[in-house]
Length: 53
Length: 185
Image (tube, chains in turn yellow, cyan):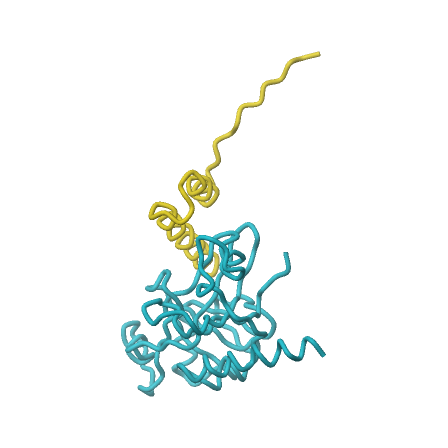
């Protein structure tokens, strides 16, 4: 039986990356809120992009 | 997850005036567990008029009193039009039961020619919540406080378009209370 190895593929989804990075910070800290703002901005930008295409 | 599209979020009465969402009424038009939630604030006007905006785009808009509303604290340079679904422009998508959103030059051209939906408002900026954020706010979970929480109600033409400013917030609070009482009977 072959032995498989599965390496984790880096994601290029910026939203997923930001959510993951936010999880590394303390909830409620300045850094956490900063990530939250960035996430919210990205969600808005994506929607506007979708609306305009 | 049950979709919250078409729901109104009404800010908590104890939210302080320092908060952007103080006495705000927000309509949810997109809601996904994976991609987050989007809404527009309906009861904060701005100093800018539709006429000024149209002039910037080289369009002559005949009247000068229609104001651009502040849709939210995110992407404030973006302009979108919320309207009833019988009308459309070149970029129009559904935004809940009976409503649509448009964002293009044609919508200004049509409005200027008097071709208008039954109900409509123009907004700059929008409200956005990351995945799971609104759930936490609604439940007052840390790091959000109970004052970050929201009252909710089902939107209607009347609450969205017949009132403005603080009166709209007061009417929305009444509507939320009434709908909650009705749900028990």
